[in-house]
Length: 289
Image 1 (tube, rainbow, N blue to C red):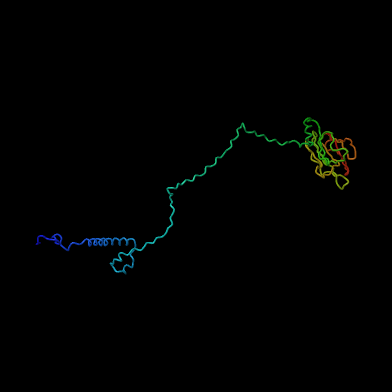
Image 2: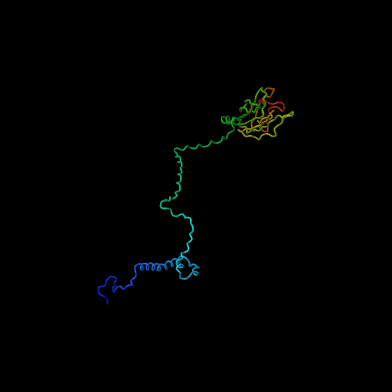
């Protein structure tokens, strides 16, 4: 039983002396408890991230050092950044638009009122060549279709073809000593003509006839004997015939005057003009039918 009137340093019945822990000790116990509780969780987290090391069995089991060993550092590798396949928000992708085709300008078709008429091509002339005996004869045949006519022209050495003449007019030259190398003849209403040339033959005393007579050339057509080529031999004479009626001539020889007119009937007869002398020739002639 306690004595009444307790002084300082006395204890009550509710708090027995020496049994109550002090505050510093309580704080240290709380820290140690917190550490012990957190260690298993740390070890479990480390075991999940890496495999247990083999050398842990070599250490003493149950030691704090084994449980708190830091995990091995992870190995990192460098990798270049890959470009994003998606455009950034700031970029705008413009769709490619093909260039517009150029317009094709089609010229307007000319209207019938403005188009120029197409002129028909001129047909080639079907008549005899201009300047020939047949061309000269065409005019006579048109003005006198029932008449008998003959036109002719001479190729004179050094001069060329003379103009065609008809019905007894002279062709060739007179008193000039010029030689004839070719004749062009055309007839009308005598059933055509045929002819042959007697030509100078160099180194011979006699002139030489052409190999053959020409074919019978019809009325209104050109007939040629001799040659108009440069260096062609001159004619010393010629022969010709007609199909019906008669044909006449008058000739002038070199170093001589005009001879008398001579005529021959139709084929098979023929007339002859000139000479067979190889060193002589006729200068001019007149023909009629």
